[in-house]
Image 1 (cartoon, rainbow, N blue to C red):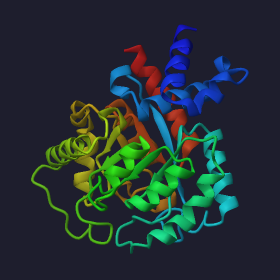
Image 2: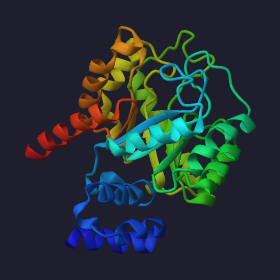
Image 3: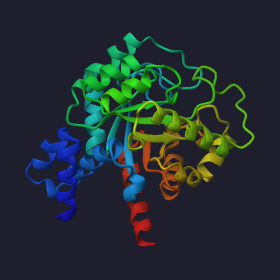
Length: 310
């Protein structure tokens, strides 16, 4: 009860938008509402590193015709909204909505087209914690105004000079990802002397940059960018040495779901995705970005139980 009182007090002061969840009947008995409230506080205001919280699941919702795994499945607004709610019911803490494919060799789309794809979906999910997956400040601004609370920027604020100001003005959460090159070029012979060290140094510099633009450390999460400008060997090294990113002091987001480094055909990668997810959570990942929410939630619950028993 003390914990619930503390969460309620902090939410009332810092995140008024969650008060309706806290005051709703049965809050104390509803783990989903507790998780949502905690997530809002963590991603926007309080670093999970401070509280030792982890094991969050971010469900992927691509409203694109050409994403590598599910392109074309959710271009219809009603289908996209239904899938978002299905993922939330399966245990997703965050719904990450993307309107531009970032698969290798993907061609960019205009800000107007991206907004056309994502905005109707975001507007119909006011009760869910939504992240907008975009590199464009104009898309981020419209999405945040429509109800998104987090911006997942694979360029780590490098693509659009206005993005940092947009994040600061909206007090939004920011996920800063490492990527060598652009989606169109990133898999053209990526090279590193030491992938883990170089990714860590890049993310440290991006955190410093974000803070210099008025974005609070407690708003920032980092992503090593598995599959973004890396060979299979680079991806394996980053996964094996993931705990070396923990000293950065920000929540670690990892997206490995169904990616080619896991081997086999896309539809055969669930076992590999779950194995990688288990390893990542055990090695310090705070948020897993996934397609298969229910299965990942089950894995995360077990890993978190084992970690607490150590």
